[in-house]
Structure formats: structure tokens, C-alpha cells
Image (tube, rainbow, N blue to C red; front, side):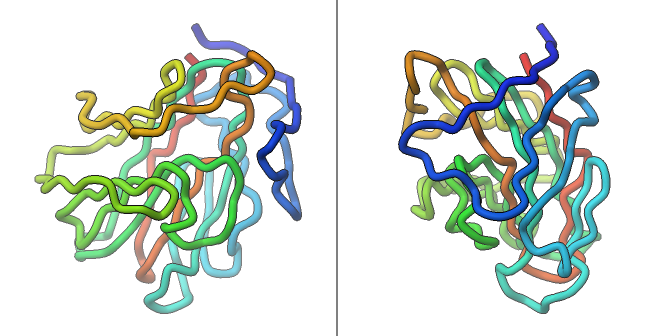
Amino acid sequence: MLGTFSIFFPVEGIPTPVGSRTPVTSVSDPSTQVAWYGGTPSLVTSTTGAIEKTSGGTSWNANRLFNIETFGDFSVNFEFDNNGFAMDSCAGLSFVDFGPSYNQINFCVYLANSAQLYMYENGVFISATNVGNSFQPIQLKVEGLNVNVYLNGVMTYTFPTTLPVFNNIDHGYFVFDNSLYQTGAKIKNIQLTYN
């Protein structure tokens, strides 16, 4: 069931992001609710539903974020678009943004050289999968206390760490986090849906 949410609370034990934190105050059309903030805006171009690295050389130094505030399940769909070149891009869910590098994303999906998909949790390598051309879209779906990864509609991975329960309420505050390595790397068709 899709819904409208206007609730925010700081989660106990999880640091509140520093800087320009703009909570989502209403989700009337969750498929287009992507309000970018923070990160490294001078190195990327971000539009509704897409982000592309436009400068900064080859380094894990570019990202933009958007808040997800919920007391229930949700999913973020996206596609990596590397403009026909072998590039490295990461996207995932974090409790707070610690910086633009992929190893600072809590639940990270990392596309390496447009051919290998890696899963990282809190900067630690967990799993690798060779992917062809038909693995997208990617869906990160919070279901209960699990973060599951769907490739082209098929659940293919569950992160080993279950989500904490705060004050007997599931979930709370997340950011859609990402990291782009080469200039031209892009994440597109980003959609947030509350279930």
C-alpha cells in the first residue's frame, strides 16, 4: 500500500547527518520523490531520478543523497548507466552519510567495470556475481528487518545483518547513498516506493 508520510524522528544510537539535512515531509507521488541534498554537488549533476558524475577525475569522490523516512517497508529502484564504457558505480542504503566513498555505504551494490556486481556491507566485501546485460533494474527492498537485492525482478541476495528495531518501531531513517568513480558514470531511473 502506498502512503503519505510526514513523520520524522532522530533514531537512537544512529548519528544525525551534519549539514543541510532536509527531511521528506510528504510523499504524494513516491515514484518521483527524490529530493537531492548534501554529498558533493560540485562534482555531479543531479536531476529527478538521476545522478551523473561530471568532474573530479577517477576517484570515489562523488555522490548525492536523498532521505527516506518511514516506519515500514520501502524499495528503491535504479539502473546503472555507464554510457557504454566500463565504469564503476555504487548505490545503496545508509543510516547516515559518512562520505562519498563506496566503503562508507551501509548496504552497497557495486557495479565494477560494468560486468561484475559486488555486495558490500559497512565497507566489507560480502559477495560477487557476474552479470550480463539483463540484470537491471536493481531494487533495494527493505522487507521486515532485511535489506534484499532484486535483479531484474528476481530476489538474488539478502544482506546478512538484520535491521535494528528502534523503540519497537521498524526502520526510521535512511538515505539513498551512492558513489561514482569515473566522470560519466551515472545512476538513472531512481524511484522510491513506500510499500
